[in-house]
Length: 440
Image (cartoon, rainbow, N blue to C red; front, side, top):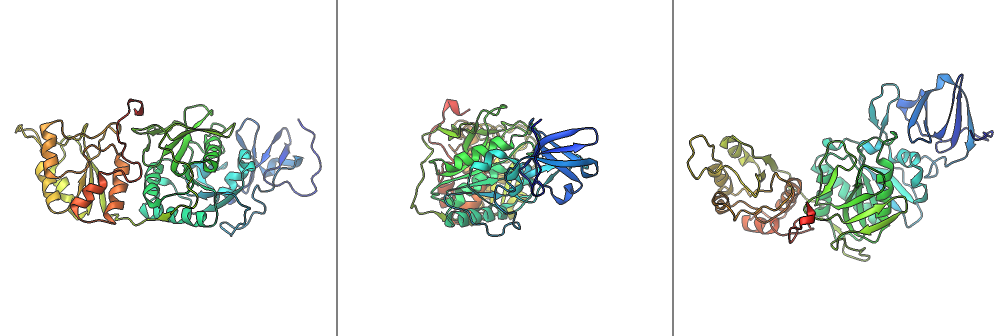
């Protein structure tokens, strides 16, 4: 064990220390404590795992090597204006598992108060010039469209202040909704805006947090522009993939490589260890300095998202008449039960859908298969739906992107023909021109 030296002042978060108890001692990096941890000293061990030691058991804490009392300088009040030399990356905390940690009293996971603690606990971030702030600290399942708008405004403020790129820490469950919304709201971005998170809290040895946020920082410094999601490429820590904001989806509940690019190649591959980025798509644009960046965050949130299912009651469709728009996620190439053959056991939805559309409510249909393109020109049943006015033919949007896009379009256009034209046209890369075999 390294030789300890007497500290001129009490050990600070970021210092390497030896914590001695009556019958054991532990070497590690001292981590910041929150109010919930006030009875514990928390260390990050060389194994990557964290350990909480009751203060009542500690005989001494000795300094081995001075680290950074805070990688940010002084620990100021949360969101107090922090001056950081340019160029810098703005780190905006929006909650999620990546800013969670274990409560050593209960074993439960709880959110920390600030991304400052995250920076302090991840040594790989020390080399980056980072300006942090906490926008909010909530689980992503608690997010609503109003949160997307606040994030968009926060990104705009950071770019106006001179940020070279923006990293957003975010819960993984609804990350693809937010990335899609920001893709429409942040028009003509001059630099990268990168969402990242983790499947496992940052104080677990198996956490994907450090590699994900390190890779996101690399991406935020890169010669690219647009909204991206940066998460593990596979189960190892070798690389992360950068996914386009409107073409990504969480496809597994718990795997580290849960995120997939849908119907397209990922934008890039990021190697945290070497801090290099490899572009994988010709659609990944370079930075656009001096461009016409603007925020267009208005949404019509009176939009419903519904999945069709066998035996669906037509009354469920009729009940959607209170909405200004409906995303009805169909089967396969774009099917709903229409029962043109008159099967007595079938429950057709065609009449209810037609009535909804005739009343002026646009109905957009992506597919439940997620992968592939809607093509309603193939079967007679589908053509009946097309004739009724269903929108989305030949599109390959995910249901989540279709939902966000319809909210964004309806905030700008109410005429059915114009809504159809905008929804079926690729505005920010959400619809690919052709289907690639490698995109599945």
